[in-house]
Length: 236
Image 1: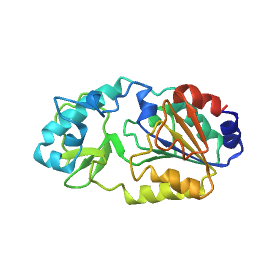
Image 2 (image 1 turned 180 degrees about the vertical axis):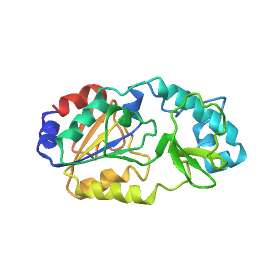
Image 3 (image 1 turned 60 degrees about the vertical axis):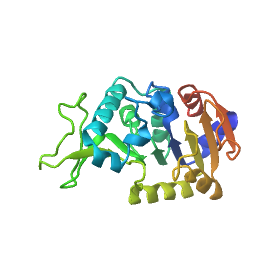
């Protein structure tokens, strides 16, 4: 912990990569494994372009249910500590794989949302993009003002990450002095490649997770415990 604190204190360029673990501490389900089942459907069966084409109402019912669960939780101490860290550093980038918007609610500003945002919609006709935090939605599937059907503003299985956002994340990782990896297993690509990229560029990599992960042996410091407890201690 002391080594991690020192690296963070002296670094001017800090990048943070967050995954489902930090949100799970707030009570957001991970939507994986048996706990991720919804009406006997797996997330991998619903979060795809093919599923949406086949049955948009079913997919939207699932997202409406997810939005309802997320709306009942709040950012935790880990989210808030990252806001404090952002205020301390001149060069700071938060890269998240999460779509729940908890980093926004906590007050983070410099966020790259690799997998999109569940609180945004995108029109399939005119390509408009807008926020909508209504829970539950009055109508599913929702539609745009132009009359076109909307889809969730998230990246589905089989879809590429937004080009510009991914390039920005890669650039941040290359320039980082410290990469803080929080609540992610490090197995979801291409996000996980940021860890290798940052280390190859000379950054100190610090992992915070409640359990050992496939990247634990590759990082410089691996800390075990909830991010809501460890991150506040690290950024004081």
